[in-house]
Length: 479
Image 1 (spheres, rainbow, N blue to C red):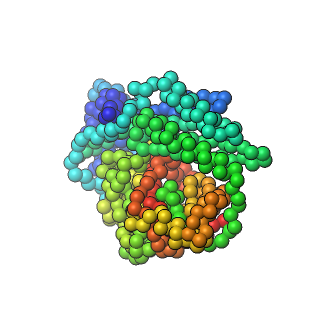
Image 2: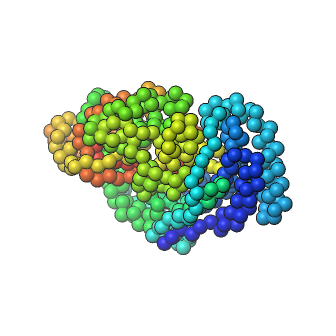
Image 3: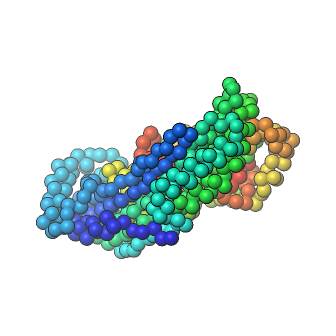
């Protein structure tokens, strides 16, 4: 089913186009991004049901102008009405406010002053995503009934279950971009779900999770139900988990954890606004080996079909597919439009905003390692003493010094080429990016994606993204 376009954006399209036309008489470049995102979030637990609007919802516009020296932006909630007089009044208000900030803008650092004007090729069109079942056709009551059924099934699987949080969220993202040469519109839907059981066997309490996500609708709940037995089985196993002995080990990263490595090793560190600010060590390695020759890594809104996908970014640049690492060699970063202007490179379509009220930054979209030709069984058989890492919890990267660390929910012990059945939890992985990626020696033949999380720039500026990869054999420090 095609995702319907926004009726709100249809109503404001002509007023916004008129606003761009009026201000184009004062500025060398004018564009407007208008957003209308709607969605719901559901949570069902043993003694509580929570239904609320998704935190990703927004409605508003941001205007960008170039005054011959630098770029200024102005965000607003309504286009000013439909009449020419109201649009003229809005244009006059924007002129006044931007005039007062123009001198200050010229003194700002990167991203604002002494940049050339944006040039665009003419382009127009509408992109509509497709899903199996539109959530609004299911309704709130039926959605809660289905999630409650999953909660009840979870208690049938385990006598040690204390509680389980069954979550489902869906968001329809609709955006309109208008400039002198472009009129682009997109409307797509993403959904994500979680199963989070808490089990207890005195005095041990453990929490497990499974996540599900994609450019999907209510059909995602079926995937959650199919994954429930495995989720509950692992939750029970975690009650017997040991602590890990710290040290350096050969490890196999599950696709979920490989995605964490992709995100943290060549994520923020190759966002080109970090190059301009001198905060990314990766900038010194362009064209140089940074990984094993079997390692390649992509990022792009059109590189995969997941929650990081879109047709155009928040600066009106079409999403792409950037080959960041090509057979071990660092080839290219990912850029927003203004850092691309500063560096005199082609923008990659990675300019993303947390909302229409926030600045656009170079951000990851779908970041993943490509597949190899090995099997998981071959990888396990090749390890004398190591671990299979499963389920990332969190990660952190230091782009300037290229260190990474990640928290893993659990790891399965491997001895003499076999899984022993012993589980350790939690596990922490550490490393220096070139050393970790240089140690990659085997890759499985399938790529899987995790799209249920979000990514912050520093400690803020959260956006949706996905990450993934195949099973990967490498060497890492664990603790």
